[in-house]
Image 1 (cartoon, helix red, strand yellow):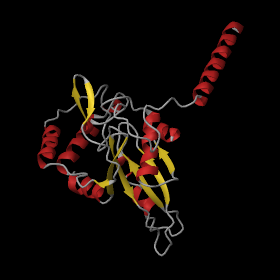
Image 2 (cartoon, rainbow, N blue to C red):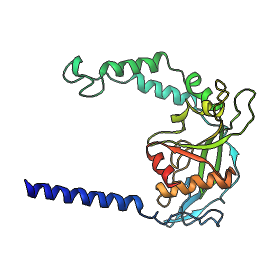
Image 3 (cartoon, rainbow, N blue to C red):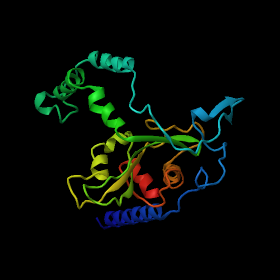
Image 4 (cartoon, rainbow, N blue to C red):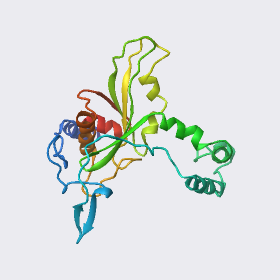
Length: 259
């Protein structure tokens, strides 16, 4: 009994020491470049910035640091929507395990899945439910470290009859997810019209590299710290926002901590 207790204490202490070291460790050297230094095409660039010749990546365009509007956001071809609908219509019903009373305890409820399928086929409309909502925000793209990075921007307009003094805030989505994760709060933060005393925010929601309209790296590893450097440069250098608050969920929380 005493030996077992001693061993447990040693294990707990070792875990605590390891956790302390992990939290206090210095950030690893970034694969990317410091802000405002020359772009090194040997580091990373997306599919539109390289071609392969003898297994050697060669840049095919210069980094475009201009911030441009993305006019095609949420635009989906009718044939793509039809293809998705056909796949949903062709889905097969699933069988629960252990009867109806244990359906939720042993997996996804078959009744719930059937309800989702019926909703997608008979009630959901892409244009009404998503496209119009997505297009009401500003969508911008720019190159950062050779990657085409997308971001949603909703400038704070302030409450009615209140002076504009917006606070920049960056919202970072998780994995797997997208900027749509925050669609219920973007407008509420930027324009709290129902509360004259509420703070007003300039809301900036980037798509992390490899998500939605942001390019994935074709060369090099883009991890938490590299993504943090991209986000910071996007804000400071491209969008001219020197100071900002940041919030993230899931992998976005790790990026936010690194920022």
